[in-house]
Image 1 (spheres, rainbow, N blue to C red):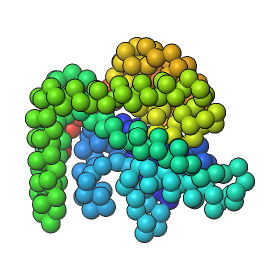
Image 2: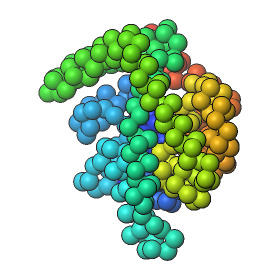
Image 3: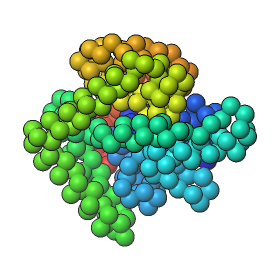
Image 4: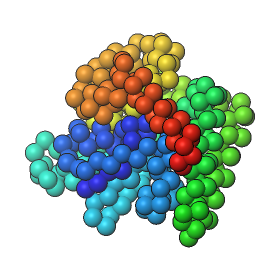
Length: 267
């Protein structure tokens, strides 16, 4: 089994948490979306949306995060039998879908300083044009990605887009806060795949420096956040890259890579 992913990708974090929690072995391939590696033709032919993650098991390829996680559950069940392995309940799946409905794209980009965001956006457009020249048979699909990049920039100028994204997130967190009045985790007193979906959302808020506004202002979520950060899966999937000084190291490393490639015009 192969997983194409990257620590910057929220959905990648969700899937990797599920793999670690279920103890499923896999081969890891990093595909850095900020460096435009998801636009490379080998990946683009496999998934023309260029979105991460991509889970591959033989000829079976899955792109949707929830579908991948449910597939991982089935793999874990077959691998070890029913000894301690349970499928997600309807409540868990409902929470998974509810969390997945929030698209972090515009919220995240709106909290990135303009000079960094615009530099990366321009760099990605150059990468797409370069890949288009290398693989003319994929030109149509690459044109779609180029148009999407321009549309994203236009939408970010619209305050209503940013407002809707924030309101959706606030509503979701308020619902989670209420639920955690009665339970330790999102769907009861056991860590489930619903928590696997939620933890990366909280990690993204931390990465953006919005912990006080969105997490610490909600006592139940703040307590929950402290608890889940102690899990081995969190430390391996997220903490390894974004806790404390590691956050700066991860971001600086990518930023330097982009500047070098841009300077050398190696797109």
